[in-house]
Length: 321
Ligand code: ADP
Ligand code: MG
Image (cartoon, protein in one colour):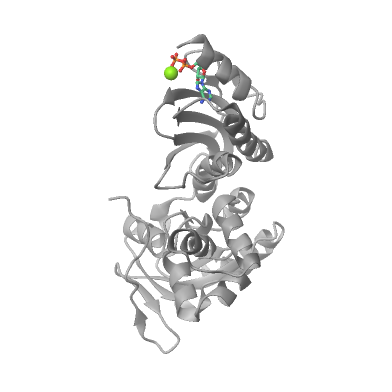
């Protein structure tokens, strides 16, 4: 690599995050060296954000840095893991120092908040793409997995759903929104707050979990498939924010809550008796938890409307292929 790339890495990445005691060698060698604590498993997740697919050229670079880390943190949250280290593969069309400074600032703020250290990566030239790998710890055998939902479990979601989808409708389909509703929705889309401490707080009470990145219906289906169960969802119980409710007709808002991605909330299954205790634990983080349905026998996902009819969305969630 050229001296330019090396000084770029030094300038922008070497000290941009938290310094952790469990890292003995970070950026600058062929590999990073780090230690997993005794009694813990390493949880690893990787995600790529590509211009034109996951974000548009107009994105604020700080929001992109934030989001690249947030999506990986959300995966760790979904497993009940504690974040520790990140590695970053960054493909850039050119070296733009202002862009890089903003990108690393967005990344760095969220990393410091979650005690994450950037320990390595790769920098290449090409169309803008950001691949972030996250590493975290979870006590051996205690991870929240997709394959542990049980018949009779309640299905719960954190926060509200469909907000990021509302922002995408405004941005990509030209839907007009009141300025305060647009501000709220874009904030949810561009600056997601992964539910990391929330998931850890309820880890011992929940059976299965997934983060909602592609849409509730699509993501819940992963739990159903992996666990060999079905589910009934009450559409009317899906939690909707005020801005979403005041922007769309009810059925449209509920459809977004069921099918739109990018909210990075958690979908959890747990025994019905655990609901109240989970709500209390999550309220400490200012996070709501809403009961939306139950796990059943079989393999179907049935979404019921108020009058008892089954709602079938035309589209269940984002798919790349
Ligand atoms: P190598 O050629 O041995 O793979 P590189 O020249 O790609 O090493 O990178 C030099 C060092 O800088 C390595 O420690 C690598 O992990 C780190 N690095 C490169 N790009 C990034 C990046 N975007 N973010 C964090 N660390 C990076
Ligand atoms: Mg390399």
